[in-house]
Image (cartoon, rainbow over all chains, first blue to last red; front, side, top):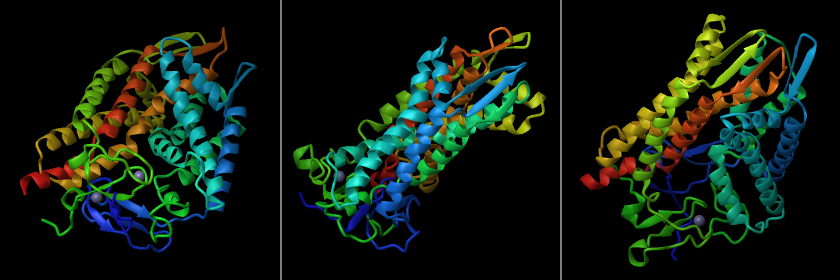
Amino acid sequence: MKTFPHLIVCEHCDTVYRRVSLESGDAARCVDCAATLYRANRMNVDGWLALTVTAAIALVMANVCPVIRISLHGQHNEVTLWQSVAALGHGAAAPIAVPAALSVIVVPGLQILLLGWVLAFARAGHRAPGFAMAMKVLATLRPWSMVEVAMLGILISIIKLSNVVQVTPGDGVWATAGLMVLITLIASRDIHWLWGITDNHPLRGRQGV
Amino acid sequence: MSGRLRARQLGVIGCHVCGLVCKDRLGERGHARCPCCHTTLRRRRPDSIGRAWAFLLAGMVFYIPANALPVMYTGLLGSSSDNTILQGVISFWKDGSYGIALVIFVASVVVPCTKFLILGLLLVTSQRHSRWAMRERARLYRLIELVGYWSMLDVLVVATVAALVKFQALGDIEPRIGIFFFGAMVILTMLSALNFDPRLIWDGMATHE
Ligand SMILES: [Zn+2]
Ligand SMILES: [Zn+2]
């Protein structure tokens, strides 16, 4: 099949553009619908992989260390991120625990694993086994990753409970905040250029990918 | 209208996974895969409008019990009550936590209702091949993609609070069925937005030319 590696199609309105090289930090925008076409890549693979490993540590910490501790009349309680979504599993609303756990733990975890896998091979200039599948899954997962919502949820819970009980933020809350920033950095929309830095792709070596 | 060409006019398709632009041979073969990542190439998301309507209507139906039924049971220091989302907002407001009342009101009322309206508007105008305010409609679509998932906030706040407050005699907070309907509504409207193809907004141009 004939392909046109020098072209790009806007995903939001189907307008066709010629690819141009971008200054670092710039983004190419669609003239018709103002959607972002692509960005100049801001990270090298090593930096990206390092952030992915850090994100993995933050995710583990948020699920091992308590995010919030409360005490009431001498009794104490604390929960990790995992325990808080698991609490939804009790009672009438139980089915909603599944998407809640997916969006704040499982999906970010999968994003980190898949990126780690793909980047580890990309470091050597190779395409990881299952690369296309991993990239497809990463694109599908992106809208369902909600660590930032969990972070705001924790903050609101802290304020909400501080009216009635004594509340202290745990170490897990810092891990969650770190994870929120890291996931945004590593798993944003602009993972397309990974196709360009690994071998056997028509876009290899092209500017602006 | 503009000098820019759309993929359909040029006879090409952009792969939505790897971004490669390929020659559009769907007319002859009926089925084609991207030579790079083997994703099935499609001019538009399949049955976009029908699926988006189905998810949107289901989401709107779920929004009714989400508001009418209690989302949380609070039994603390002798007093106990079942609370709906709006009762929660009102009690924050009365306690003087105006900021939190506002955040929860936005996440649970403003965002879902805006989403219903915008998706309904996009679907109706696209079905009519309208050429009205295409650029603005494209922006509205990106807006709901950006803010839609923040509504999950309510679910995660209920989860965290319910997980923490478990003091047998002294106090207990439990999730109630309303939060299931609310979470399901958020997921259904997200699915509606994901199934809607923003390129349909611009297809009105072709039919009028
Ligand atoms: Zn565009
Ligand atoms: Zn492809």
